[in-house]
Image (cartoon, rainbow, N blue to C red; front, side, top):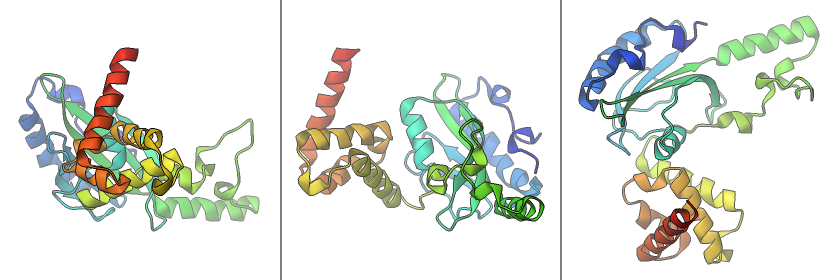
Length: 249
């Protein structure tokens, strides 16, 4: 399979350097359908307009994740935007809830002022190749290498457990995105909401902020309902966290 990063139709960020955000998105929008049609494997090409959080999907071709125009970014992309991480990610692995294996590439484009403008993402379903490799391993070696734990001295990317491979979620609505971010943050703190004290709720808010949750509309109200506090309490938590961060800087 040809890596998405080697496709000549995928414009390098430098090729759009000096353009404003709308110009960048218009150019990339014209390429989404032709790029998807040129791929030899089941591939979805998605253009995220990063000015439109949370409804960032501006154009999409392919049905790998079932998303449509107007849907939100992935949790991974939202977290990167919140952190100001504008590096490209080439050929990383993730797994859909139905077990399909994806190989993904995300190219981030910035505007003439260095602000995030767009992300062009390719998600290729490589499940058939994973199955083929497993069958070949069993035929040649008598066992499936993809199901064996890596040797301590030779870590193997193919042997990473499915939970670790998940890495990225592909929500179909803002509500779904908000819910999965809340669940992840509460799980990370490790205390049931009904047993949380203030320090635990502060940890949840800090984790939500790190994940970009508060870039989503109605985020304070959603967090308040989940944690059983008022919207104003959420704002107070954010002010307290940001004040502590400024003092330690």
